[in-house]
Image 1 (cartoon, one colour):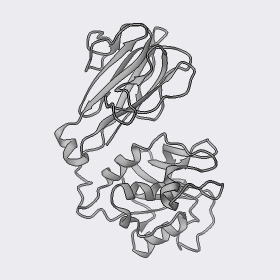
Image 2: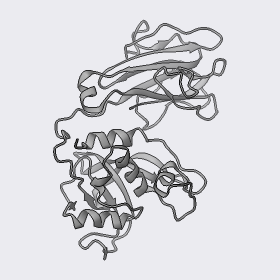
Image 3: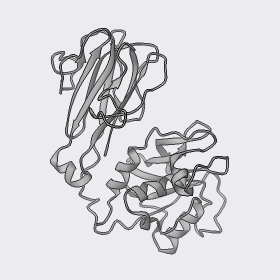
Image 4: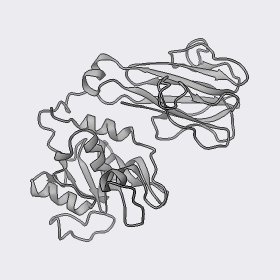
Length: 313
């Protein structure tokens, strides 16, 4: 069965926020090299892309096994699937940080970095998902907005026969929290976190752009409050979870609608919280209790100050 651009992007989105440690040590390099590696020579933007396509069962759409941007771009060019304009969602996009012409891939600049296009924006930029990017030394997986001025070219995987042009977009999670008596700005997926370091969260409001969500919060020193399904900070009964008291745990469950199931498969909420002024605890998936999960995110008795939520398979 053909792989769609949306399937590739769903897998990539689920990785947003993943960071490498100990000089480029990450699961994408471990998968690619067949064992744990680390060192400044193990940049992993290409191995991230290779891992994503492998997870989709579509490694053949990259036409080569490589950890090198230039080699990957040449593989697309050799099959006449390299473009320098008219970029689309699902393209594997190559960036150049200098204007040095490429000898390996004639007609392009030397490729220094790679990502996957999530969206082509009306202002002439592209939104991408990239590995080995960000301000941290070892890199992480992030959603970026890039100017076309740094795009060298893009490889176009052969999604022939897929439903990418008519498939449903991956739903996003939208959420916000209240702390110190104030509702803070809405956050989308893992583009940021909801909350302020050091300020205990008292209320949570969230929704999905498609499908429905059931969620509740646990009051520190108290009990679980009733489940809610709405998203309206002016409606305390079912518009948000909380009663303006500090909370220490959150439970979220996502219901996948039929049209998304047909295109993406069943999805689940992936979420985590942090204790006040502390580091994040482990990811929780829906209300699962397998693999060491508690069925909720948080620790009873430990007030939380940050929340992150997205959807994944």
